[in-house]
Length: 387
Ligand SMILES: [Zn+2]
Image 1 (cartoon, rainbow, N blue to C red):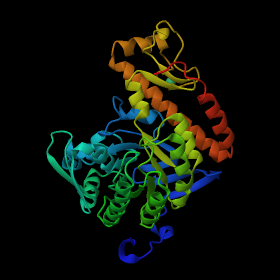
Image 2 (image 1 turned 45 degrees about the horizontal axis):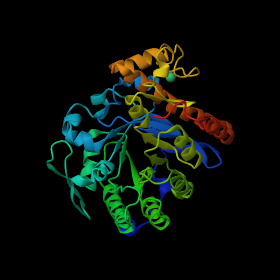
Image 3 (image 1 turned 30 degrees about the vertical axis):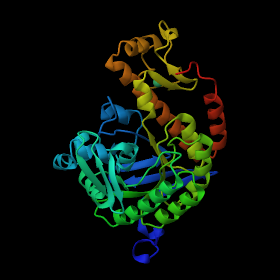
Image 4 (image 1 turned 180 degrees about the horizontal axis):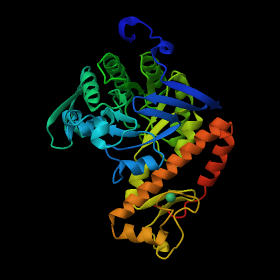
């Protein structure tokens, strides 16, 4: 497939939003300018699917050190609808978060709810809404328009994301449709100063991933994502793919790994040249009553914490560890008190945001490889308890 118009786009002329300030091996520290502020990378992006990081006030999310949050076009399209958000001043005013916001296209949601898909063709995908079963259709232009009306700072392209182990024929079709739609979306109207990121697919199949990198990388996007990874494949297979695929993306654009947020995974993708990443893991783990710590995951439902006066993590300066004991947190979790999941969400997000900030500082100092080695050694300690 040739890029739109058969021309090769001049990336270096397209925009100057992203600047790499330091590199250490393949790892990079940079700055991405958006309409609602700068993001220092590497950056972990807390997920606020329905325009809220579950249970947290935007000021709390900001105080944790979050620079950007995610919203999801699929969910916001159905509830409350992009026209409602637009009429209330856009997603920033609507959600009370005045920093950068990235909206995912909804492609991941459509294709992870595969049973709801009724047809897939060159122009888009038709499916039944997960909310009420009504028929809906997403096209590249339609998703661009939804994101224009939401007014996010970074809009993602509509892509076909398949689970690991999908037949190669399906994976090939996913790569083809993702490229076709990317060309369509690249030319669609967008909100003022809205950045637009392309998404590559192809799983860990070298030939298909390479094809997708070439096709998407040739389009005039402000950033590029590795999609269709961390979808059930072996971890080492995924990292091996990132190792060659990340450097194959345009070096002067931010590189976004979609869907990683465990401490080890963050260190490993940053080491391979990834600048941005997101995952529901910190907040989802919190809602199951577990905390991310340097000693592995701590499950507060475990009776051993019943009378433990220590904080979750002695070193942590988050709002939960600053004031509360494990015994109190366990009490809240076992009694299903709302404060319990809020405090664990604050701690878990702090943990990954702090880890990412330390990684960034280490890259800037040129000490990332020793930082990563030491951090991985600590994180490799046997978990205090299994989930
Ligand atoms: Zn903490």
